[in-house]
Length: 127
View 1 (cartoon, rainbow, N blue to C red):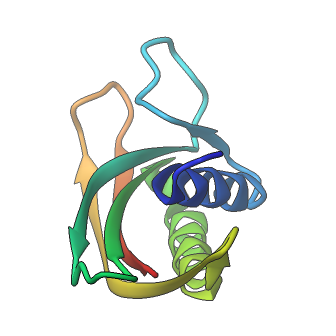
View 2: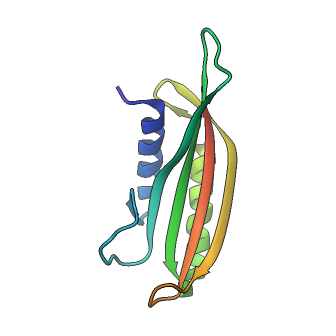
């Protein structure tokens, strides 16, 4: 049996993969083609612990990497991911609610290619 944290990670990983980009669980050490996405577990904590119920907050971090010439495609991907995250309402036996979502985009010039690096931080409440 998977923990709610692992179920959420697996479901988000699958959901993002279905958008058509390669998704990794860590930044690839080998050279890979752009675009690609990295999904990481960021944080989890329990709140409102009661005798019969407990709420868990789970945060995920999603990094997107595109060539800077593909700004429109990058924005479309960020929007699709955000919408998919909002639409995820349950995982095997648990209700989900987006508590917080924050998206940022920067231009990254630390490689030979000018890149767009998007970051989506999302926190779910799991009941």
